[in-house]
Image (cartoon, rainbow, N blue to C red; front, top):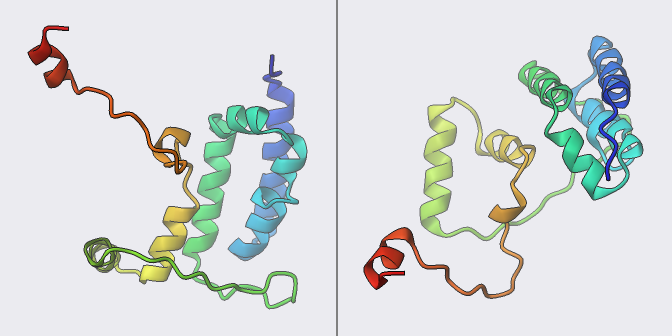
Length: 147
């Protein structure tokens, strides 16, 4: 059973808040709080405890701190700790166009929009794992077959 320690949640939130109060660039905040060597991963090293924390109000507020830092539009610190990397993602033209229009509607760049989307929590059930699944019947199909 995973311990749902409110004290541990508060300790992590306090560490994030202290970092946030120093007004770092968003990359530094992400690295120190949410990154693989950050406060959250150290406090919740296994996937199950991390998942529990990610559903907490403390985590939601930490995400809002990140959003506020990203909104400052301040160039990130070039301290050599966090070089940028480029990834190439192959998208169908229709998805690319949808992202382009969404970025335009939000008055932002596609890069910023995609980073925002990448920073969001994703339900595990929404990620295909590569194994073909047996299609589950829809409610309409079930009703039609009399099941």
